[in-house]
Amino acid sequence: MNLSPEAGKVNTMAATPALGQHSLREQNIALVAREIFGAPTPPSRADVAASTGLTRATVSALVDRLIEARIVAELIPAPARRAGRPAVPLAPATGTIIGLGLEVNVGYLAGTVLDLSGATLATRTVPGDFHASDPATVLAQLGTLSADLLATARSMHDGARLAGVRVALPGLVDSATSTLRVAPNLGWAELSPVDTRAIAAHTGTAPIMIANEAKLAALAQVPVPGTTTEVPDSFLYVSADVGIGAAIVLDRELFRGGRGWSGELGHVVVDPAGPPCQCGATGCLEQYAGTDAVLRAAHLPRGSSVTDLLRAVARDDARATAALDRAGHALGAALADFVNLIDVPDILLGGAYSELADLLGPVILAELGTRVLSAPWSSFTVRRAPVGAGAATIGGARQSLDDVVDDPTPWLAGD
Image 1 (cartoon, rainbow, N blue to C red):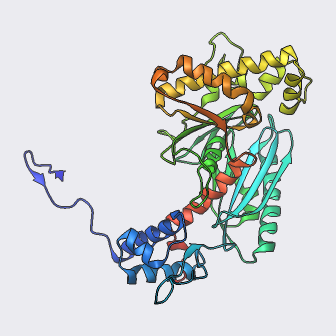
Image 2 (cartoon, one colour; image 1 turned 90 degrees about the vertical axis):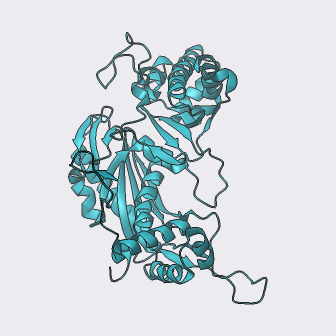
């Protein structure tokens, strides 16, 4: 009900016009597509009708449109257990529509192409040093990488159509405008999809969006229907490279916050009097638990890796052990603050933290047990993220394909 401008009166008429035939059809075909893509096992038309409440005739007509658009495919019917025509299972189509996920990080460029079934058609990582880099130069390299990946994917599936592109960046991204506000470790600021022309030259008219790399990597951890990966419905994902990224997943959905800026764990203050951070503040978690900070504290040579750190710890190098211990306690304290605030007890470690999970996990758990108020009545898990290398690009490709499932109408013949 809407309050009328006239005092004391209530207008009981609908505030919005009734849905037209076309809008209702768009909603129904999206409902059917989501039901097929979200089913743990391939459903039949009858299964979809039963779960959506639509009539069998309506579902059959909508499924036919999805098959014609090569969004859904029919599988071989299972042998019938009783008299009558066997049900035809429905599944996401393979090799017809593809999504491209790209990533720029301080130490590499990466990309992955997936199809609607979730199959990886192409993936590649190119090492480099992109600290304080020129965005135009780097995006031109990313465009070349895109062309190579798409050529590989289409060599296997000629005519595959590109749904969209997600570019993962390690910084603050305004989700409403798909604009990077700042990426301190890259030295980039105020980058919008308009600035990705060098990529668009190789990807055509497919939409290009910019997103935070940790958020896309977190989405990659959410199991695809039908898989057996055991990941809780709600978790905190935290990953490290030079910086530290994090994302909150609640009931299998990404919690973005008001402007898409949630999860900036790397800039939680550990010590206000601590060392200066690239962001302009002092004492940020990155300066204690970022990989560069840990390697410096371990007194390892410039250019050393996490593998070198692990080797130093294995030979009982006191400085390496102390550096990793300090990082674990700082990270655990910051994560305890998150758990106190959002009450999500499951933590997945990605990026460089994935390699360090066995050593960091017990330290983080100890901090959670000490610092989380509900600890006496709670249990916590800290473990390696199931999707490691290329997680942000996988999440980006998935998100581009999710747009097709959420709104199949633009892909239908005659619409």
